[in-house]
Image (cartoon, rainbow, N blue to C red; front, side):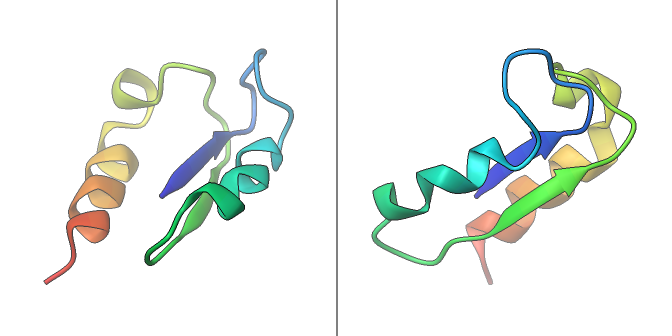
Length: 57
């Protein structure tokens, strides 16, 4: 799971998807609009959903 934030000053939008080749198992990339670098505080629900989804059933 990689997450990109629209207003992250450290990673260009879509930049996280370039890590795909470093994952050996299931992979998901998400883009979060309207947030910056601190995803857990700026988008706690989306961040928590990504963690839960990454854990799988």
